[in-house]
Amino acid sequence: MLTFALKRLGLAVLVALTVSAVSFSLLYLSGDPASAMAGETATSADIESIRTLYGFDRPFLVQYADWLFNALQGDFGQSYYFKLPVSQLIADRLSITMLLGVCGISFALVTAIPLGVAAAVRPNSFIDRTALFISVMGQAMPSFWFGLVLIVIFSIQLNWLPPSGSGGWKNFIMPTVVLGYYAMPAIMRLTRAGMLEVLNADYIRTARAKGAGEWRVMFKHALRNAVVPVVSLAAVQMGFMLGGSIVVESIFALHGAGYLAWESIGRNDLPTVQALILVFAGFYIVFTFLSDLANAWLDPRIRVG
Amino acid sequence: MASNIDTLAQEIQGPSPAALLRRRVFGHYGLLFGVTVLIVIVALAVLAPLLAGQDPYAQSLVARMKPPFWMEGSDPNHLLGTDHLGRDYLARLLYGARISLAIGLIAALISGLIGTTMGVAAGYFGGRVDLVVTFLINVRLAMPVVLVALAVVAVLGGSLQVVIVVLGFLLWDRFAVVMRSSTLQVRGLEYVNAAKAIGCSTRRIILSEIMPNILNNLIVVMTLEMAHAILLEAALSFLGLGVQPPTPSWGLMISEGKQMMLFEPWVIAIPGVALFILVLAINLLGDGLRDITAPENRS
Image 1 (tube, one colour):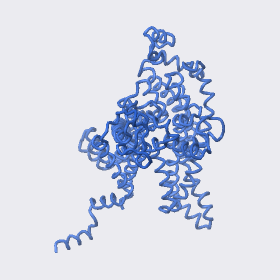
Image 2 (cartoon, helix red, strand yellow):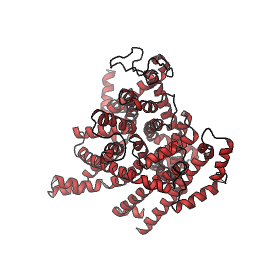
Image 3 (tube, helix red, strand yellow):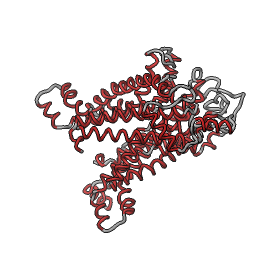
Image 4 (cartoon, helix red, strand yellow):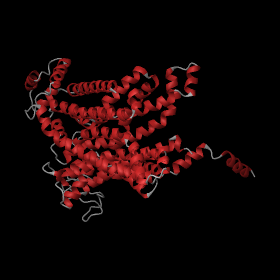
C-alpha cells in the first residue's frame, strides 16, 4: 500500500510540474506579454521598459525556472493589476470557491444517487424515464444560460433570491444548483449502471434468500458496492467543477477564485492567471490522488496491478 | 411461390443483419429524434441566406428591440424581433447555427485526429508509448479547460479560427482514453494476429484491421465532443473571450442580451433554446449510436 501511495504521489507531482510548464509556455510564448500588459495606447519605449522591468527579455527557461523556484516557496509574484502578492489574492478568494464546490458536489450527490438507485430498482419505469430525462437535459443545457434563466425566474420574477454578490447564504443557492446540475448527470448514470450490475450479483440473491428486508438489501448490500466507482467519479467531477466555477461565479458575481480568474484574464494579469491555472489543476490532482488511495484501500486488486 | 420460399428461408435463417440494423435504428426514438433535429438545423444553417432574407449585420436605429412574433407590437419583417442594435434576430440565429456547427465539427475533427493517434498508438504499442500517452492524458485532464481556453484566446486574440484551434487542441482527452481502451480490446483478437502472421506492416494492421473495428466508438466520441465544443464556444463567447462581435455566435447573443433580460427575457431565451436543442440533438445522436452499435444490444 505504501509503495502504491508513493508511486501515485510521484506521478501527481510530475503531472503538476508538467501542467505548470505547459501553462507557463502557453501564456508567455503564445503572445508578447509586455505589449499585452502595456495596453493598446503604449509606445514601443513603454513596452520595452515593461519588458526589462518584469524580466520578459530573459531566456524562456530562465524565466520559467525563476517562476517555479519562487512558486515552490508559495510566492507567485505580484499581480500586475491589483498590485498585491498573487498568493494573498488567491488565498482571500479561494474560500468562496471551495464553499461553492463543496455545496455543488453535495447537491449533485444528494440528487443523483437516490435518483440513480430508484432508476435501477425499477428499470424502464416512470421514475427511470424521469431520471434519464433530467440527466439528458443537464448535459445539453449550457450552464451559463441555465444560470441566467434562474436569475430571471427567482430574482426578477419572484424576487426570492439575490441575483448577484457573495454576502450571505442566499447568494449561494442558485450557483450551487447550476454547478451541481452540471456534475449530476454523469454521477446519476454511473450509480444507475452500477446498481443494475450489482443487483444481479449472487450475493444479492443470497441476501434475499436469507430473508433480509428489501431496504436492507438495497442499502447495505447493493449500494455499498455500487457506490465505489461513484466515489472516484465524484472526485474527478469536483476537480472539473472548481475549474468550471469561473463561468458560474462570473454570472452570479460571486467573488471567488473563478471570478478572479475571469477578471485577471480580461486584464492580462498573467502571474495571477498562471497561478490560478496551477491552483485549479492542483485541486484536481489532489482529489484524484485521494480517490486513487481510497479505491486502493477498498479494493486490494488495484494496489497490485 | 417464390415469395413463399423466401419467407420460409427467412424464418429459418432469421432476419438479415441489415434488417436487424434497420430495426435497431428505427426502434430507437432518441436516435431518430436526434438525427431529424440535426438534419433540420444543418439545413437551416446551409440555407441561412435564403431563409433569413436579411443581413445579420445590418443595424437599424429605428427598429431596435422589436419583440418576436408571439408578443404584442411585433413586426412581420422581424419574426423573432430585433436586438439592441436593430439587427434581425432570426437572421442572426440562422447564421449563428453555421458558427456553432463549424466550431463543433472542425474542433472535433482536430481533437479527434490528435486523440485517436495518441490512443491507438498507446493501445497498440503499449509499454513506454502507453506510459507517455497515459501521462499526457493525466496532464490534460488536470488542466482546467475553461480557464486555459479563456487565457489562451485572450493572449492570441479572439477570432473564430483561434477559438476552433484552441478547442481542438484541448478536447482530445476523451478520444485518447476511448481509443486506447478500444484498441487494447481489439489488439489481441485472432484477425490481428493473423494479419501479423502473414506479414502485414504495422501501418496496414492499424489502418485496415484495427481502425475499422473501433470506428463505431470513434464516431460516438466525435458526436459527444462536438456537443462539448459547441457548449464551450458559447461559454467563451458569453464571457467575452471567444468569438468577437459582431459575429452572430449564439453565446455572444446571450451575452449581449444579458443587459436586456430584466425587461425582455426573450432575448436570452431564443439563442439559449437554440443552443440547447442543437446540443440535445447531437447528444441523443451520440447516445443512440452507442446503443445500437454496442454488441450487448444486438440480441
